[in-house]
Length: 218
Image 1 (cartoon, helix red, strand yellow):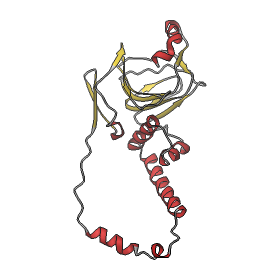
Image 2: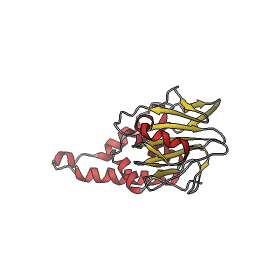
Image 3: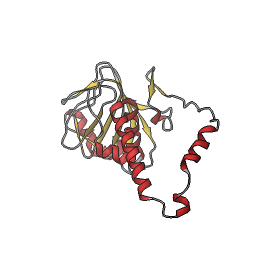
Image 4: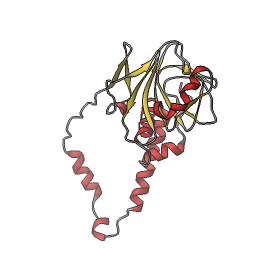
């Protein structure tokens, strides 16, 4: 069961087309997995369309008197072309194959990098600060304890993981900031989509040595 969702403000910004690509992918993918947010977005889209129509209300008599019922009837009477089937978004890492939300299908590439149980596929979203990635953590893997210099969005796509705050399941949309310190870990393995707008700051052990080069590796 999905417990964590984008805020209504974030959904509204998505509907209005105000989000950068990295965040738009995150929200779109979550909505594909979450009926609750999908329904919210449908209602927001309808309200947004209505507001747009009212704002652009016709002022010319000939346009206002146009017979829209007749036009709609004419359109509905014409045969429609068969719908083109959108291919599934698939990815393979460490011998495991995953079916992803269709929001990812234009971003996937066959290029993973990583170390140990952690592998990452970068997305090119042409944004100066935000870094968007698929992040795969193998069974028994863990991200060392860290906090954030900015904001981190994590959408769990498959598997599960936990940290000091909770347990997370597919579809959960998790927001972390500089107020949070955690060490995500997974027993069975997981695949996530992450967006970060600043380097992580490691807080314990030998991983603290990575902080001086954080700008290069986040």
